[in-house]
Length: 289
Image (cartoon, rainbow, N blue to C red; front, side, top):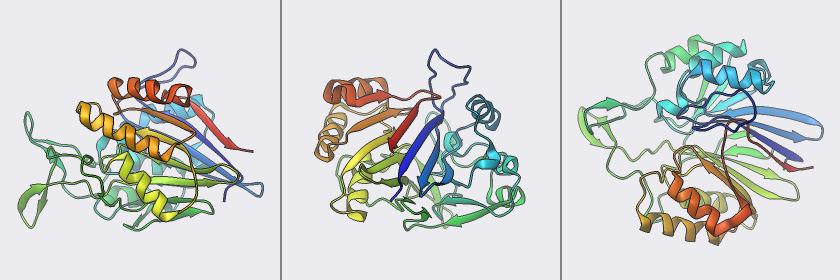
C-alpha cells in the first residue's frame, strides 16, 4: 500500500477564483504516491489541448520531466488530446503510456452529423512512439507502482449504466455500436484509509467501476471517488440508480465534475452533503500521512 496519496486536478471544465488557470472541456489528474519516502508521479489523462495543460502544470509547479507515466482512461479527444506533445515534453525515452488495446480504433458519432470523437490526428500510436513514448496496452489491471494500478476493463454488470447507442466504430468494414470497451480507471491503496478510485468519464458506469474495484480488492473500504460520471444528459432514473449504487459503497468523499452534469452534482451534494465537492482546476486532494 501507499503511505500517502496526493491528487491535483490539472484540467477540468471549470476553475475556481484562485489562481491563473485555464479551463477546457476535458480532464486530467496529477497523481503522486509516496511509499517509504519514495515518490511515484503520474497522470490520468491529458485533457484536450496540450498548451492549456502545460500552462496549468506550470502554474501548479509540476514539471513534465518529473512525471513517470500516463494512463489514458479511454479514447476520447478530451482525455487524449496532445498526448504525443506531452510525451515529448517529458524529454524521456520509452516513457510509459498505459491504455487499453482498443484505444486507437475508429470512434465516431453521427448526430447531428458524422464526427470523429476518438484519438486525434497527431496523437496516433506512431506519433506517441516518435515522441519517445512506450505504449503498454492491456485489458487486464496494469501495475503502475506498489499500491497503484489500473482497473483494467470494466465488466458491465448493472442494467442501467453504459454509453448507450450514441457511439459507433468500424469492425471488419462494418459500422457497429461502440460500447467503449477501453474505459478504465486507476485505483490507489492507501495505508489506513482504503481505496481511492479515479475515473475518466465512467462510460462503463461508476457503479460498475466500483464493483470491479471491490472484486479486485475484496474487503477493502472505498475511501474516495473522483472523476467524471458522464451523467450530463442522464435520465432521472439513471441518476437515482447511480446514487443508490454509490451509497452502497459508502465512500468517505466524492469529487466529481467534467461530464457529470450540474443536476447530478446537485444530487450528489443533497445525498452526501460535505462529503461531496465539485472538481475545479487546481483542486488538491491529500489522503494518508
